Length: 138
Picture (spheres, helix red, strand yellow):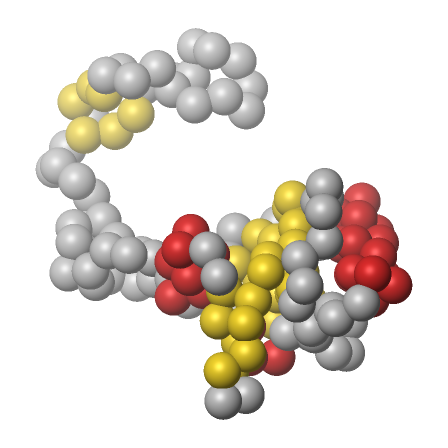
């Protein structure tokens, strides 16, 4: 998971069921809030987090767990790297973008164009349709 352990770190991943960014919390559960994340401050704690991430990944609870270096400011955890700050903040698009679905559900989602659907999958089961293979719905 990591080549060198950061000074202060938390374990993050994406939840397998819905893809939401999650953090390992102090109870051993995966929380959507970094505020509940358990902080590793020593090599032994880092190893414990990595082991738990590997275990939960093998059980198909989360995908690609890895350590994130954080700093504590006034009791709040803030990732050092910009990429991780974006992941913590959530999607960087607006709610009024057509087709946007909040992680909580699919209510309010509109199709991108009327009477358009994806063609049958010719690439094999589990793969994405080829780009541009949109056909008029019958």
